[in-house]
Image 1 (tube, helix red, strand yellow):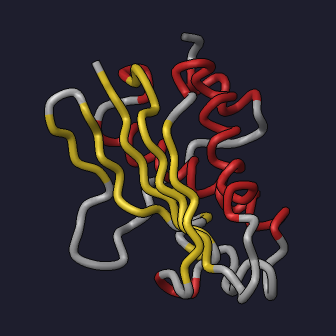
Image 2 (spheres, rainbow, N blue to C red; image 1 turned 120 degrees about the vertical axis):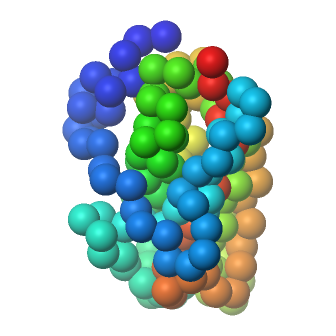
Length: 152
């Protein structure tokens, strides 16, 4: 596997600071060789980048970009706990999309995260996934992502 930090930069991103939890939990927990990452919102510099429902207030294309931001925030949580060089495999992604009535494009939205993991980790970034439409997300966020990662 190539250097994930270099790959993130090559993709035009920077590693964000770990987003502060918005309730009583920690960003990530390790048990054995797995890291469970708490739900990550599309925070940039400590601020939620957008609010609203996908398919009404937020376009599917924009929501896909927001899912990539969530993915970067999830990687920051992993990095703060064990370091990205310890990642063996992205195991499972849980994607949640605050969806307007009739919006059924949740898989395409969560592809923003899946594509980023694949670009950063290659085959080790290929994962199992759920892409779920929900009526509301914390703080009015359009997208939320959680993650399970295998580490050394």
